Length: 599
Image (cartoon, rainbow, N blue to C red; front, side):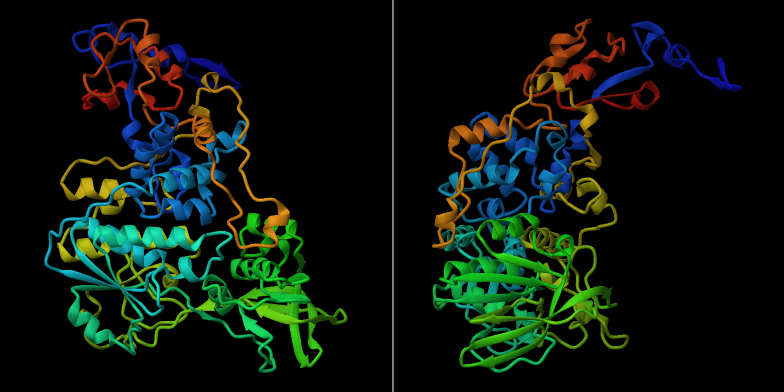
């Protein structure tokens, strides 16, 4: 032991040669106190752990780098049904945690997802076999409802999706403007679900055309995934004037190609994505100028930052900390008065109260006003014990909880909810919620124990789950929990020379402001492969062979089918193989912890 300031420190040599094993078990003698293992099966990349949908991004991009975009698309389809859609509208939290961001820029995961999602759209889709007699009813055909139906159909159930509108897709079809998500892309993805076996019944409003009670009698389980289809009203008095419009109906008219042309100055109220989409759509409909007034500070706006930046690049003015306090109408136009926001208070129901300051009012004239101050659910069709406000109460797997203290608790059995109606926000989180509800229904109908389910299928600690692991768990296979996220420090940068992130193609600014053509364009095949090759492929073994080549004692054995194994009889535990693994797919563990390992 070495003393330092009165503290005894154990030397590295003393730790190194401490072993309770004999040379009959370790043929290289007492030198090895640690051994290398291939623990890629319990590791995941930070991008996958950060993806609410649980996409196996590192593996998919490895496939793209090898020219197999078809297999990459199939990998994504294991976890969610819409790579061509999420590749366009997802806010890509995966990129914000990408290990490469600490090196030379995050991999353009979202653009790659869109690229192989589009190219995989022509793949044949076979109808999923029906394995069970129970049927599932899904209320709402937005991203959450369609995701739940997709996974349940693949599990062997017949699913019917009930949609109040005349076309399926929910917010995907009628809430996101075509310049971000073309109508034909949504229609193509819906068609693929139909080929898989999902049935859509459009123009059916639950509560009017079909009661919830009848729906429960028809199906063994029901999912409420209606989203937030109603715009919140303005909190101030406003004249009944056709020049004053809510954002959601306005965007629906845009998606239906029914929106009227605009001119003059258009004022937008709100700071979320609906407000930004309304502003950019108004510009495309001919507005001379568009000004968005958001009560939040710039950094607190709920809209995604890149959408805010894109709006400003198109010439839309954004004024923060401004709250409309009065609206008047005349034949010459509208007049809106604004007060500055002094502070905000978050109420217990999650809503925000904006407290105005004492500065003089600002007055703005406009030809039209579009307000997007939030959305709310429409749950009148639900029995009273379920219709809690402002969101439905659900368990870990989407099961709805009764809000009544008395009555028959069994009424809640088989009733689930998913998506924005449960408090999620944005498309990819709705997809994640739909996946959980599908798992919840399957475990409910098949009476499967769920005590250790979360531990077996979760990806990291942020809430993402793996449907691939769920299928393995369901088959009784010993799928290990994927909990270890590969940090940047475990990447061997010697094997990754700096390469600039791909420049993503898009329409010119002039084209952006005059048409609803899609703005962000696809990477061509060569650019997609080059960008995919930037991926560290954190935590996966792609058979690069470094461990085999660099082992000084030939203790690494190549398996007949895939992967490598360690000859523990001759491994000295030097750790060179782990050090030379580019992607962190190996680890050194204490000898005592490895006694029960097979390799």
